[in-house]
Image 1 (spheres, rainbow over the protein chains, first blue to last red):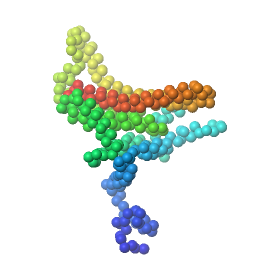
Image 2: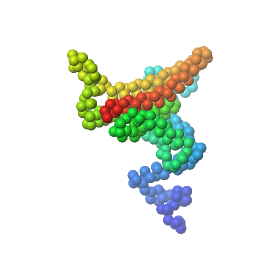
Image 3: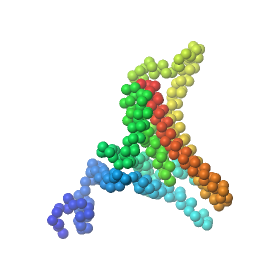
Length: 85
Length: 226
């Protein structure tokens, strides 16, 4: 189903489900494009939560802590509270 | 218990992929670059701290030494932030690895020595012999001064590694002891818990002090050689 606006220029929220594969394929996968995507994602988060007058990095640190729990899980599995270890 | 104690220092891997580069690069996103005249709270505080530290640290240097300002400031920010982030639960501190500290210490020290030899050869070589030594002692003293010069980078790296590792180990040990003591005798557990709180305050201080000492020593070696 072709739409009025070409798929290439739509943002992700406007793309219909059927057009999703063609939208993904047309993304810029060059190193410069990937770097641009990371930069845009970072600045979206930063300007929404950190760069405001009363913002902060507490959420970032909490996420970092949870992220670091994953590699440690294997060793911490033995420290669960059970009757028999 | 032995194996349990040192598992927090192994390089973290997630699904088989070592994520150490990600962890080393993480502190950089906590220091946003100032973009306006008056920024948000985080950036203003960081700007004020950086100005305070750089003025204090670079005041003793000559014009040539002050070209190292960027290097010294980024060094103290990196070591300080990495050490402080290592105090969060479950986190991995890259500065506990001797390999990384040697990688920081040896090039910086070699840079200061090379700068000294290149621009002020006679003065750098003169450092090997303190003033006013009696003549018979000269050969021995030159040997001793050479050894002390070559030990500088190793001492820098090992100092940082040992301090941070020892602090983390103590926290693990005393925390484990507190947990085990709660089921045996509550009062002893409370005393141990107080020790744990004091130790954590010490660790915060040590994290910052170690960064400061590392950078200060590098800047001192630089001052000798410019």
